[in-house]
Image (cartoon, rainbow over all chains, first blue to last red; front, side):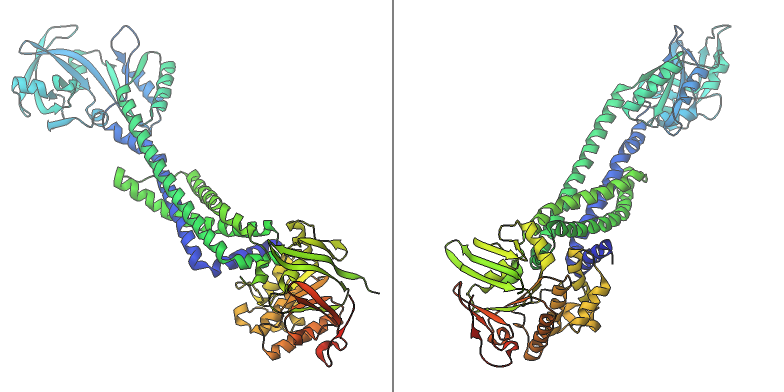
Length: 378
Length: 236
């Protein structure tokens, strides 16, 4: 029988013989690995998950024209959008600001993509319906209240094109929009409608983009757009980015602390179990030394037992940790978590490191056992 | 004349103020069977610990197979124990989770290479060839002691050191074990048996008597194997 085979035989037989006690240590390692993998997956996924959550607070990157002209070409904005990975781009909405008149009063009329704006500004509250046709518009709540206009009624706007004569057009107010922002004082209509009324198509005053990325990546993307598409200037919404970074940072620290505490408790539990095992096996250790085992043999046997525990516990923890991560993610973010492959190895490594660290003191005690113990009948 | 396997010169062992052994001097020749006798507290176990390289003497010199072992460090003593001494214990001290053959193989494993065939042959020698796959708890006391002997013999030690080898056995098993010792002695093994039993000591060629940590007698057994007659006194 080879030395390796005999070595495996010794440690596996020993573990099986004390399986009830070793089960405690195994369970501790498995729980530690479960929490490590679960929290690790959540920790790793928090920026993605929370990034998506934060996207409901609106755009975090705005494109404006770089030139003297206040409007940019939509084609340039599309090129800029193409530089953002599609899986990270939640939405991009062009806005074109113009002026029209209602009862001689100037109003800011905004042409936009009504489908896209729902993605970039999901926090808008619409009383009534989103516009469905060319002559349907949304009215900001401030205007609606001041003029006592309700959803479902019609209004007539005076339109003054750049070239040509002033004319009137009747619109149906499909809904009243409340955003808590500037939109409350705007009239919003489909971009095509605005373009057909005022001409000069394919232009936008700003393009708001919602990108699921952390602040560092946003900065990087912003730089890329700046250098690749000089016709547009990207601006980051710092207020949103900073609060997002602060919340993410705090959440990640919390996850880190919970994981560290659980790993520490795992270490204590494994260490205590191993110490008990060493105390119970003092006579056996003494015997092994008496018949010729060197300290390194004693160390390798105990460490071997520990490593087997760590591997089995780690594997159990991987399975349980996957479900734990899914459960946490579903209950907190209401969507599943993606498990990066490196976390699997990291979890096994953490199980091994924790078990080895926990075994250091018990193993040192094992090497202190005197072989003469076996002759004293203690 | 055969050379000395074991030499003790003025060996003393003190535990603080307690003098466990004082000025013990004797030699054991190759192939000799020596019994160390004494009542409880006479220093037998302390002496066995020193001869068995399990402890170091406070004073004096001990030579085993020509090598001075009294000043070796713990690691070197482990190597000496592994290579030159076969230990047999009163309480057997078998590893409960290993089978009989594995209990023998573990001594091989710590020595060099575990060899199952050789371990089974050793069990065969002590009449346990059919019990190789049994756990220690499935063996009788006598079988456990024979297993302990097989383990002690497996690495071909220069000295077999037995501590009360029949202390936990009934008469039938005691006879079986002593027969094995006789066989080993006939094959040329050097045996040192520590015992308080005159019956066991009577099997030896020579008996060293201890009292209160001192050696009081060193006698040649005129009729070894306990067949007849009382031991005759011999010079050191």
